[in-house]
Length: 281
Length: 288
Image (cartoon, rainbow over all chains, first blue to last red; front, top):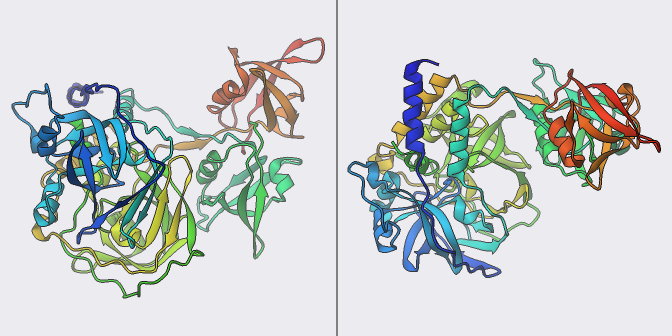
């Protein structure tokens, strides 16, 4: 690696090393189920009412594509998110970096100690100027904790706690970037926890859907399900298997001991077989 | 530059030009038979990745994004498929099939490369090449149940036609955030990163293993599989893998997950009533 590259990356990494602010013990309240009204903006975005540390309600965009919650400086000030933080001499979009919100509430579902960043996002501002006020984005760290049902026609969002503890998107991305610096990690090995007892292949010039089953071991789960050599495997547990890699990815989701459907084409006939992989290697 | 600032740009998009209106469909009751199990996975930045085939080509990778007003398909994909955008940048996708069986006819979408995707692809940040975003004009047609404790979503087709999303005129841009996409692309270029990592399938032993109180024990060996050919037998207790101690089935799986076809592995096993220790060499095969 050249020196220029090193410097550039070091600068980038320094920028990444933002320490998270620790908050107190969270106050959590999770009713079994709440139905929250949503508003659909003319731009196609949806908004919900949100309380931050008991302040508000504020109107925020509900965004499944946002890896993090985002609040503007107005919420930041009113809800005390910026306590003890010094405003930097220079910052883009009023960014104050990441904070921990003590309590975030949507329709009676409260979660505590949740990641957010404080910044005046230009797209939020543009939408707010047209339909506002809109003060931020509710993202993954909130909604991942619920089984959520979004219904645009009924204009409702139903939230049922699901016990899922979401990993931090920020930390995952930082780890990926750190790994970049360590150099080429080599290819990723796709693995399946189950033992199927078959092999599949596909020639590079083969553009048709599916992969061809080239081997079925006698007595294996694949053989017991009725798979045969020469079958064209189209889907495995509802996932497309258009390449060997996709087949392994699909199998990777299947826990040993569970029975899942596989769709194969044999001659002109499509059929669904049931396979129960073992815990093997 | 703050990393979190760039992250903030992920997801939220607004339209500059308005969308063409869809065909009118009357509101009505929901048909419960039109329900689909849509597989997904979470990317490194915790985006919901779903796959779709366009005109039977693909599959292509999309992010499910309620913060996007419409379907976005990359210019590269559209070029490959021969789909030309109209004057305002909208393309028509005759058959848009989402994995799990959802088929949309004549779907409208932007032929565009949002900076969020360019940035993530440039750095290989998502762990997969991203080809587009599925937003409001497609999503609003469904009642979506999303639960990360399951590996599929449930989508139910609604009996209504959502209104076409409106643009924000000249203000539909990203207000300067797009520079982060460019930076990520540049850094990725420096490092020679690809959008998607190279992948190889795990190798295959052809053996059914159970965990017996923290020891990996061979339950059965498939006739003529690699393990059988190497001489592994049912009842063998696996003690070491390539000179490293194996702790139970989980431990064995962790080792074997890094083995690819063609490699030779050596297992130390304990066999029979006299607990004789022996080394077994297996040439790893292909399969799963």
